[in-house]
Length: 336
Image 1 (cartoon, rainbow, N blue to C red):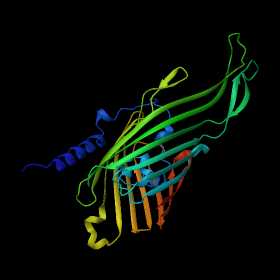
Image 2 (tube, rainbow, N blue to C red; image 1 turned 90 degrees about the vertical axis):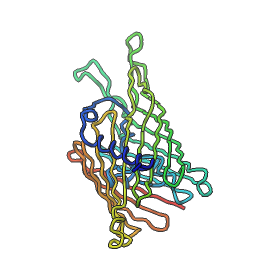
Image 3 (cartoon, rainbow, N blue to C red; image 1 turned 180 degrees about the vertical axis):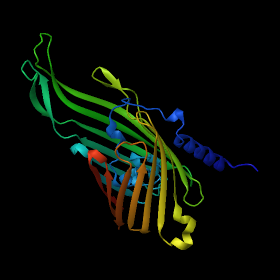
């Protein structure tokens, strides 16, 4: 009996998921200090926070631009907006915004915008000095970072969708004073770096229940030069699978749903990771979420809740970070 092309694709992708998650030596090397701009690896969206970031195949309207831009392709509303705040440890604040627009009935695809800003708080600047301490205090530094992007997604048929996301990234690490040619410390220099990055992804709906497979590649770019040194952005390759498990028991579960999402991530600068996300909806307007991620020292579980009605939604996520404290995420969404 011959396999169809669709089934061959499913078997191949499933085999690759197993290979990546099996702990193979090829994919289990320890990788340290191999990339910069790590804020690009942090999930600021509360729905993602509650599900351990396992959203590669979970269609989330405009917010999909941060995880897999192909997730925007089947967006039902014409316009979707998302604003989110992530209260990170060490008083670091992440703010993110996304918007998506579907002209007509979607025959032209879906267009998206994204913006992420990071405030690292205040840091006391110092300068080397010939005194007992060996330094003097200078101005207060306020390092920051941002990423602004444009995305596009389209369904090629009733099963397959693709998406891409182009980003412009800026890093500001404050100022410092350099000595001039005569050795006098009177040269003030700003430490800035800028880069372009590219994300792309696909989602494949099998046609059996709600089972979907997908993949994404995030932060693909050239080497970024900062002063005299170069570094890479945190390139990440992800394979995912998801399904509403209650579809197997639909006669018993009624309108309830239990979304199960599994992502396997291959990083440039982090050990390979398995992420599992759950979203239980006892009724359509309420979502209870939980997630688990492997290969992290301080954080491995997360919890969240979401409420939606009349095109407006509010999401909250809580993630304990052990000795570093707790992380809370809050997101507001609006669709028309």
